[in-house]
Amino acid sequence: MENLAKIVRRHPGQICPDPIDIEARTLSGLTPEEAGDIIKITDRGFICRKRDQPDRQCEDYKVRFSCPLPYCGDIVCWTNWYDRDDPSVTSDWETLEDLQSENPGEICQEPVYIQTVSTHTLSPATYTRENFFVCNAAAGLICRQKDQMPGTCRDHKIRFGCPCR
Image 1 (cartoon, helix red, strand yellow):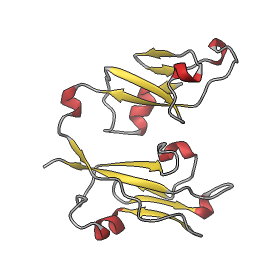
Image 2: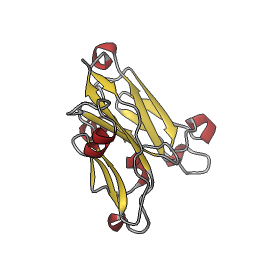
Image 3: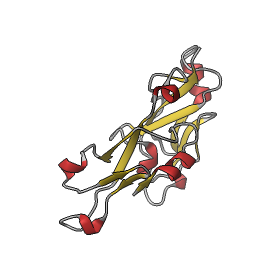
Image 4: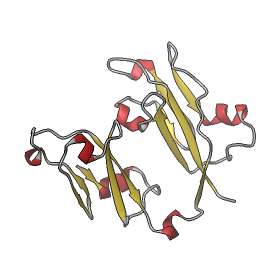
């Protein structure tokens, strides 16, 4: 279940409160139909109930929303994607300060949003179940190996949402 109200609270300012449409896909990118799941989309979000499935299992889903134009207008301009660091013995460092230094004039001084994905699957970093030391628009992303139980950090790429000028 992906509850719209919870998603809006978790990602303030990134999702309109009254979307006009919702799209659900598995973490690997399949539609519910391709995955063989029977789903229900409501005005409150997305539901995949195990009892409705032939095999009594639901895939793990991600959702995205379509918002009316006034919400999605020229509010945010997204930068290119950046992947400056590969996971090392200690961590994966995709920090705003380093990226601004290495890419002068490409990233605004004070981004308002951040998007992070795993470079391997292109799934949002939050779906990796990693524990991030830092993951915000003001600082970027830092995934430290010592914070993972068990395992290591994946390689991530990042982009920033800046006020449009």
